[in-house]
Length: 250
Image (cartoon, rainbow, N blue to C red; front, side, top):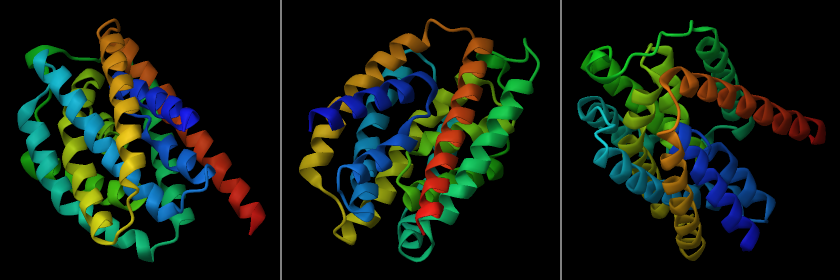
């Protein structure tokens, strides 16, 4: 349990800092012997709590574009239960392979963006509401399907749409509540959540988010862009390694 709590805390730091990190929690739980479906449901409950903590912190700093956050969240509320249902039907390997490719493309695109391209404050680019709702729906489906927190999908999507890194991270925090909670609800209906474990992980990850959000303030927009880009590529390579290992075992 101590190892799980420490791992959840580190994951929380990553979520609070760059919005990405939840990709590690499901494999960590599975490695300790928890069935995959239970690991996904338990992770989604944890990410719901981390989303609430991060939203409170970023909201207090006026670091959230609430219009974009609400529109993406509306889409995620619809997409989460759909993803939870699909998780029973679709091969996990195929889903994670697509996610790894998505992260790799996003990471490369983000790092190749020229320095100084990060906007701040009221200069944030405006994205139409249909695109934001569509992004949120994709995020909800992906979160419910894989157990990965919504920000891991939404931050890369917004970066591809040229949203500044800091703004994308802020928008992703309220969305994490909608994407994760709606997916968790679907898994709760199917009885695939370990609630005592979810409570422990939520406390540990929530503490990590607080630390990560504090570190977030110390980085400039371009620095955050580079950190997020590298994080996407590292997570993509890690996922690819896990998938290759599984394919060799088949």
